[in-house]
Image 1 (cartoon, rainbow, N blue to C red):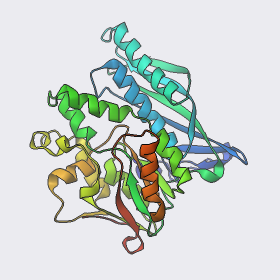
Image 2 (image 1 turned 120 degrees about the vertical axis):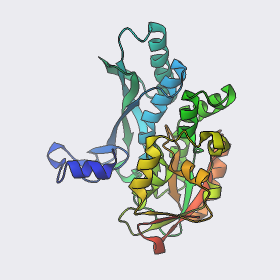
Image 3 (image 1 turned 30 degrees about the horizontal axis):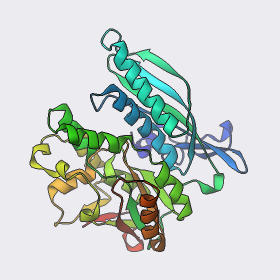
Image 4 (image 1 turned 180 degrees about the vertical axis):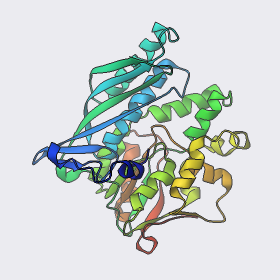
Length: 329
């Protein structure tokens, strides 16, 4: 559910009585943030989903990386996490269950975020993820809003994993492609997030279920700036544009287009196969950042120097003359 939709369900909802809430449902973002002191705030987020790959251990890794992503998108550092596991009793063997939990544990350990407990419930369908608590300085929170005219837009992971995972479930895609897509989803956004502060990022979100254009729309909706996105510059899996994936689009392809219909304009030169990638729902996708133009090249160079080896690129710019809109060309 989009933050905008949640706001309609809970009109006038306020957190003020519950403490010093910096980010909550009255101004939704990627995660909630509560101030504890002048120099410390806690980030709270939760996410879980059904398996998107067959390997239990990799599924656990991807689900954990996805859950941690919102903390990184807010400019924070993960502190601790709780397991969330829904499983069909009698249909899931113990070895698979152990693999899922081991994958989540190891990915959280990589993030420096111990899993300190959790909850399991019986369900008809397997689901796994984490509830994560992170920390951030109250003055260094990265919000979706804040992009300024002249900033450049940087995306830190390739798009197309939604189409690819739909293909995997349908028996499309070889082992090498499955392994590459899985590694991409399981890669933490820790380095891109940490460098965002060093290079003065003004705004940030992570690209997940609403696709690139859905999440980008939340950065400009009702605001003073808009985005011009250069479709050909967007990092993506070339396989996701191939004809065999054309019939594998999920329901989210349609809903993401509907969600952004009043904001996004696609140029006539953007092929439909590429447009589908831009709307494609992602799992554990990259960060979308607005950086000062003079910092973007150094940011990308430093990403590579620090061992971050996924495709990342400048994909567009922030414009004052496109207030509240996105033009893709």
